[in-house]
Length: 121
Image (tube, rainbow, N blue to C red; front, side):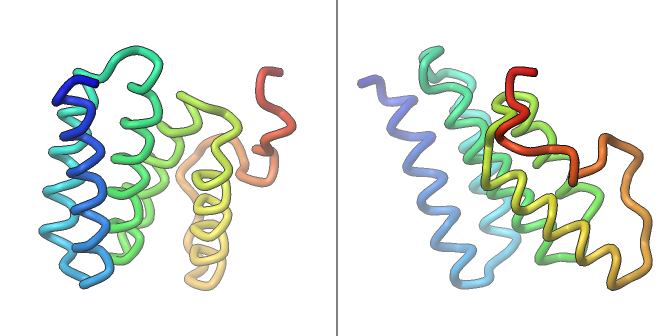
């Protein structure tokens, strides 16, 4: 296993610790570093590493009420894997938060139409 793979995973795990501590700047910076390291992952792991880093960044954006930025990253996850249940669930959460705020979603495919069963169609 190459050091880049281990470093990307390690950085994502460290960023998760920062999330639990609610240290949003450190978490974001560390997830961004994990994203950069994921670029060096072998093909069979690259998408998973990128998705993990993007979901982490998106979570930070949600915590900072930056729903548009979070949605963009969750949708990038779905571009890599249309059946990414975590990204789908978080997009639904964003949809609920926007409804509470009476804020329209970023023009995209409606979240309600995104399901793992639709992957590959």
